[in-house]
Length: 179
Image 1 (tube, rainbow, N blue to C red):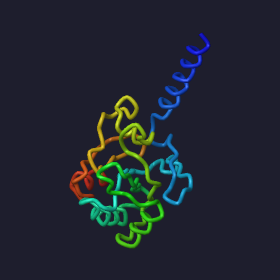
Image 2 (cartoon, rainbow, N blue to C red):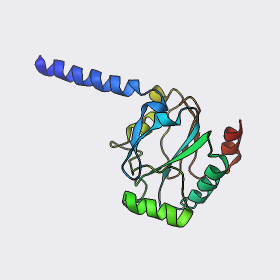
Image 3 (cartoon, one colour):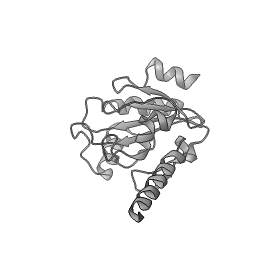
Image 4 (cartoon, helix red, strand yellow):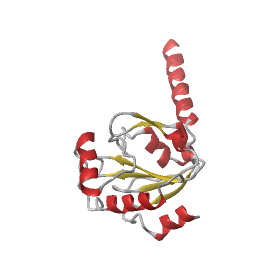
């Protein structure tokens, strides 16, 4: 009986923790330098979350993301990059190596976070929220490949999912930014 009570307590606590994160701003993540980054600091801004990789056919999108950030990333918009090694080991580097690669090759100045997993059993809780309709209130999705983009509105709600091959300067993204 004690074992059942203990299991139920664990399940209740776990469910409560997940359910309490019903908004993008409820999450805290680690920056690429290891500092805590509270997503609540982005309240009132549109946010694009992108899983990135340094050795992918889509890697040149870093340039387009940086251009987009320079054009729109003042007080109302931010891009957050999450390096992930989930697709054909296309992000094998350490956080330090990734940061150096992004700066040296693409002049990235938008916030980059620590490398995470965006799918599977070790999926980061933020990506579990982004991909699960019961949590995000928008729709279920799966991260198809590197450079998939998730669009978060100024209220911390998921409002769009953009496929990996869609470039950062696409009409879909620009329209969302300018609405």
